Length: 228
Image (cartoon, rainbow, N blue to C red):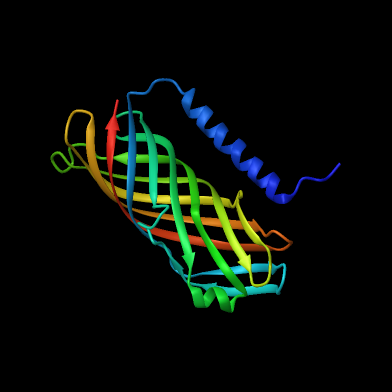
């Protein structure tokens, strides 16, 4: 019997982890208030180092510049669900479709003809949140922090080598958010926020080898919320 590849094992682990999280939250008892948020915005990523082994050129260790290109297809966006326990504290689940494109010169110097995570440097976290209702009149400031994992869509081709184009389980991730919301009705609100994410991404390359990198993102988000 053929032994499952690391890619297959990681993809299976990511699917099971996401399913477990969703099942756990869907079975949670009713809370005082549930808030759903949908947002987009302007997301960037600073330089980070890539390390690993290419199937054609061997070991590499290079500093790569990244671009977010938030509004190019597929766009940057996020979805968040928060179970507010009272007026102040809540917990929830959040998904962001972050993405990064490598600088062309840096990519070629490192031995790659294609290097990006653009069908998602997808980040899933479980969050704890704090808000201050009636702090600034109708405006409610809030902060949240979460830990979870990344599920990047690995789009990597080494010069002269095969193409890697698949979802993989990347590794641990975290996020920090600070923002403020403004109600436009009893159930609907608008909000703006700053969000930071950090993720460790250990990926496998088709044809043998690996590519590992830590990626940080910064985003200014705007969105709409619905409470029930």
